Image (tube, rainbow over all chains, first blue to last red; front, side):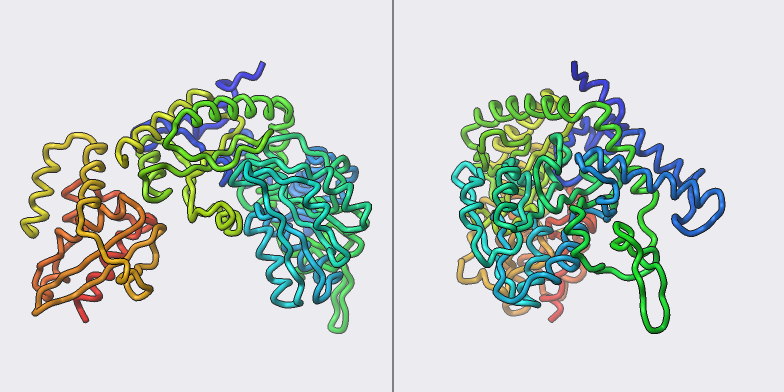
Length: 406
Length: 134
């Protein structure tokens, strides 16, 4: 059985109070809290095992390198990737997607070529493509979600045209919680010879991921949402795509030789990892992923599904609350607005006074906000350590807010 | 002592024990404020640096400071109502003298004034002081 109280003990911050109330942390979609094992690994990394990687031939450098490089295998296992050398370290999803934009798309797309996106994408999976639109005349095409917030895979597949050169699709909406059937999309896209980048920023923390099964070409994750340190992360890139890429950031570590007249590059994945990386952060990410896999991604997913069902039933009972997105099989992410409250910030301010941390705003998803016809929403996003009691605390706080604004 | 309109609020607040009632009153004050005509909600009156939309329209008349304001967020609108009581009707020369931070602190609302807060109270106070100084 899944003992959420035992899991909570692993996350020291959950014991604290905020505004005199026990912390109810429901802003996991923005960033997740860290288990003791990760905090300890980061502390130990600096206190006992720190040196730069890949450089020195001394004891500590070798030790740090070994630990740091060992994380590739953990990430590969976490993502179901066949080969750790297909894992490129990043500082997060944003960097991963930018790497694909500059390193792959800029090499292979030309003016008039199309990139297909869903309207649910996060700005991190929009703005890099706008760069290509601005610089190269690449065209962005958008696929809408239906009235429940679901994305019909067939609609995406049908939108693939002769000029489509890349699909960039989230596996889980950070606003609606909608889970996208990326597998169906990827298999159809592969038949048409179109590569797919999957933004796994939200999804990877909530469900088992297997990139081989999905059949994508790029899968980007970010460490801080995976109970890992901020500025850790990775992108899985299929071997054949990696071979098609040019490095986009230049500097130390990614080169083999540099002279006044020429430069030769290191082998992938290091070819794409310029400069001193987040050594300790990445080591911490490995510990976070091991922690999650130790609990079991299936069990985490089941726990969160029960939280989702409970939250859905409680929130639906509030007839003055408008929850955005009811796609079947959605994750435990709830965006809402409230009758009477002028602005999402009104709601989050009151919730905060009650110790309930949620996000209010546009959630870095401008096109989706336009599609929904709202400027901002409040978002409660759940994680492996949240409880049904915390759903109740959220509802109590919402009732107070409604009472104050009504 | 601040203006009588603001002192009234301070007195009312003394009877309110918990933050919920204080917020309730702030929200009510926002709702009771004279509406700002939509025609005045233009880029020139918009206060940037606020998470919600905020407009302030200031009109010094014969040396007396007057302003209207609005926001799409109810709590922020309430804060504007408090600023209205603090500043509206003051001689223009005295606007810069008001220590808004400590006055609002008397209401136990100082947590709205930290630099990181995105409600824009600081930006609003700055805009008022700038306009009065012109």
